[in-house]
Picture (tube, rainbow, N blue to C red):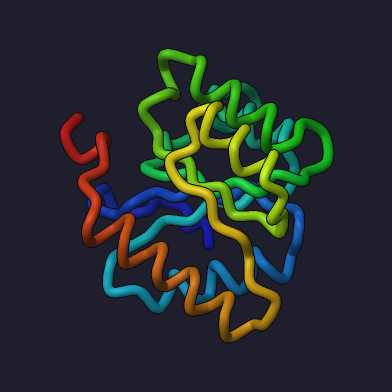
Length: 151
């Protein structure tokens, strides 16, 4: 999930998620990808924001190519983290995919208004969740051109 020294050509994904089962399934599914992915998972919003800002203990953190963000997190919730990312000139270029259980229209509208690049509701079953992660991988790492590819 978080190799000590990932290859320079790997894509770096930051997953901010408090559900350990979702972290493990996401990690396992991305490990099967054809693309080399360096996944860093953090289980609360405070750590997630520190990582993005490269604050202690994440001073040497690699800037992610993509953030997968749950909305309902301990500490800072995903809504607050999204707002921080999209108003910070050092971070605002990073695409953020909201990956959450919330189907509330208000959450969807507010997430897009705050700058989310995508909003996905987690399916209930394990197989469906794995399919969803593969579709994220296919779209974001095969179809889309990420800004970090040109830096």
